[in-house]
Image (cartoon, rainbow, N blue to C red; front, top):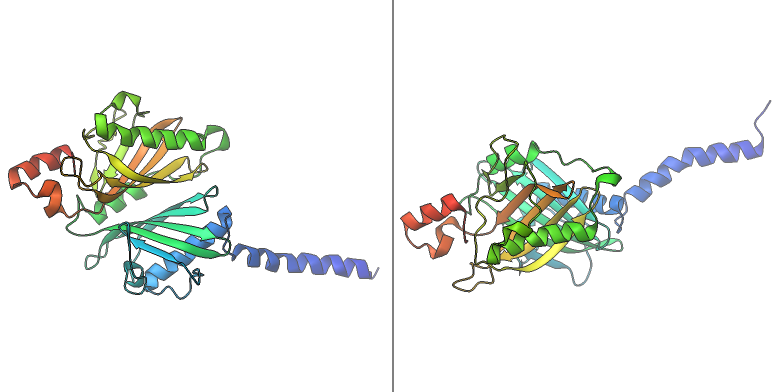
Length: 296
């Protein structure tokens, strides 16, 4: 029996459907797939040092490095980097993404924390906090080793914490830096922290992220990117408000992954020259403070 006209219409629809789907997937939007596409384009741009392929807002684009306005034409995003590892969070409630980027190139090593904000079909903001040789505890190869060995797969829906719970856990951790009320933090065991490249884990079930939490530092200027699917939250902030007795005010990011409501992984980057640590108050004091990972 020959196919009738209706059959041909159905077949044509089936054949055309994949093309429509691919087109939809390539669009930038405030959906998980759309924001993933935005991140893909960012990573391509960063690898090439060329932003021409990014759908940037024609007017009013915000580009920031280390929490200060910067020129996108001369900024780090316009420097080609050999990316070894990356992973991302997607916040559909605020149309923001976070991407951790690790570059171990010995001539040009970096660890980046990049935030994008999507506005309809355009990227409206790009913010990068970067660290490199000479910065606080920097070791890109160690960062790669520890970060890439962790499980950052999506968390089953029934095991996820709410957005409010994720923000509260991050807030409790950062609040502990001021008055050291560590009993309010949802510590998990084991929990490991990667800081610049330094690592708190020893492979023990008792590994804790509590080690090295200082007191008297106001973690200020907090902005959150939350991904419930990954059960994770990242905070862009400053390590203190910049006062002599309250921390340097250095740009900082703290990334938290929770498991069963408790901290599992903590990643932190601080844009602070090692030589400027505690105002560079002498080699002995610097060494002691580095060992304690205290007030930056």
